[in-house]
Length: 121
Image 1 (cartoon, one colour):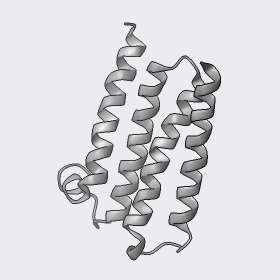
Image 2 (cartoon, rainbow, N blue to C red; image 1 turned 90 degrees about the horizontal axis):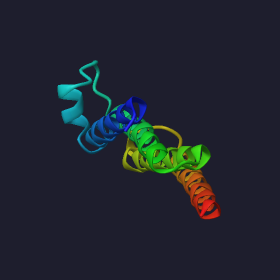
Image 3 (tube, helix red, strand yellow; image 1 turned 120 degrees about the vertical axis):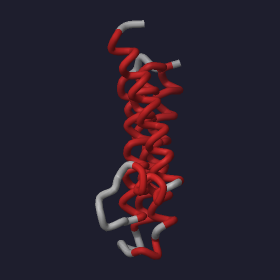
């Protein structure tokens, strides 16, 4: 395994783990890592979603030779969590259309990733 692939694997795993922590344990993540006041649950959820998406993209890139397919799959993973954050936090503000729009966006990106993967095999 080459040095860049090792870094991609380690960074990908790190980002996925910390992203999931921020998403599923926002208060704990804030208390331990992101101690910037004031606490904002939705912001920590978003941080988790985007960290997860970046890590997933690195891991998909290790598994797929197709850069566009790997990028689409990683962005779909992060977009899915981002949409979930807007459903979970819709009582905290934002536009009422955000959960619907972000879910549709995540589904379209995921569909493109699946289509790209199927066309590559």
